[in-house]
Length: 133
Image (cartoon, rainbow, N blue to C red; front, side, top):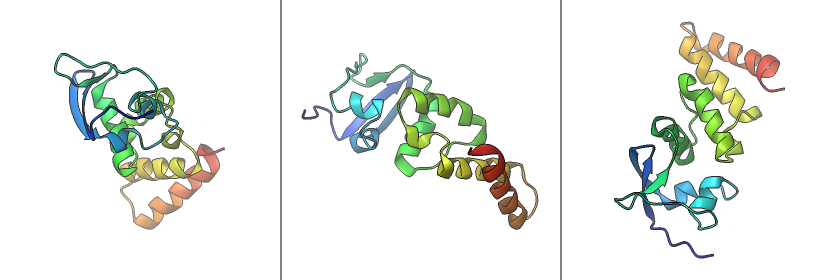
């Protein structure tokens, strides 16, 4: 099915206006976002022509940044972003072995006030022993 969406997509995400590339939204073909923006799932537009997604825009921006740069969300947003990853079918954003390691590294680094070596050691320990089973 041919896409009828523009290359640059204006979004209204829970009242927050965001703009991104169509290729960003369709980066993972099996996700709900790819289904929505390939025409396989319906998506409505608001009165200004923006495509409306009925979720919290302040959380969704972390999902969008992951799609853009493959960066994990800040630790304080991780739980909410994980729920959105489930909802949008973005398994790659959930805590698999690779992502879990990155998540714990970021989390511990935010708390650590010690050396990089200690941060790395704690990250490996958290990842292998308590996170990714």
